[in-house]
Image (cartoon, rainbow, N blue to C red; front, top):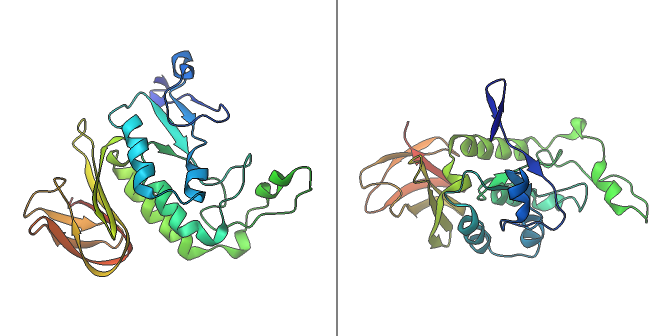
Length: 232
């Protein structure tokens, strides 16, 4: 990690087919490499916990070694537009670094393409006149949560529940810790495992509602995604 004008920066590289495993490229000056694994595994329907466990196994506690995952790419395809909300959740809660391809945050549609270059469809004009505002707000909430919690990127991952899917991430280096639930709707009890102590005051960052840990769980009124953090 070097600095320009006292601001840290990372050298990110692209090597076709690179996944989350550490390769020799990291020994040649790269701090992170684009991860070509995430999009296809998500499209194939691999369970989120399997993806997250694999990624955290490679990346947890390793701030000098990282990847950059994506949903859409000009080299592959746009992620299905009708599935962007769930895909946004999956990406923004993933271990490692993430990148948002332009238009995924507002449901930009694919453009025209020739038979010889189908990827040209991924490079359409930005849809400023037809912004999906609900989708954009979803991305913003997830993005703000990710901004505040390094544990998402490099914390130790633990599954806490299967339905709804609940996990914790705890970063030993910084002490940062979070619990997230995917697919939770209405009034539900969310387990927090060892991430938060009994009696701790927490907040669902997705809704802004507060709760207290009781018997290892918090009661929330969920809106599809729950993002638990310590009350600040």
